Length: 130
Image: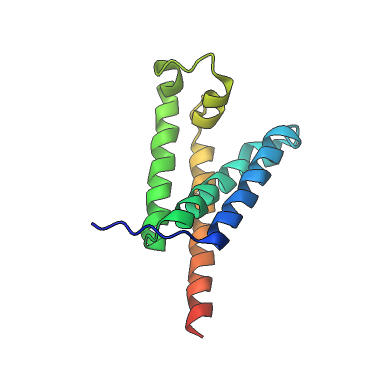
């Protein structure tokens, strides 16, 4: 499998904007339960998608599926306290990145984010073909 490196400014800027939104959710909107607990997880799969698409030309559908699988693997690792096992218990930033508690609802949020990405990509392909 050949991996094509291709820098895409548009996807990079989208990733940066989503990252800023994630930081705002974690810092300024942390008291808004729905936003912090659910919307942040929806956006995190989008952040990964656009960041990867900013540097690599992967098939969009395969990338969305791969990101969903990766997100689920991280979520299941949280069940086994993966961050603590790696020695990050006292590293607040790493524990935020890796998470520290398993939740089926988080997996549902990742799925929702991937569905939104898929719909965006289908719409984008239709626009390009017209």
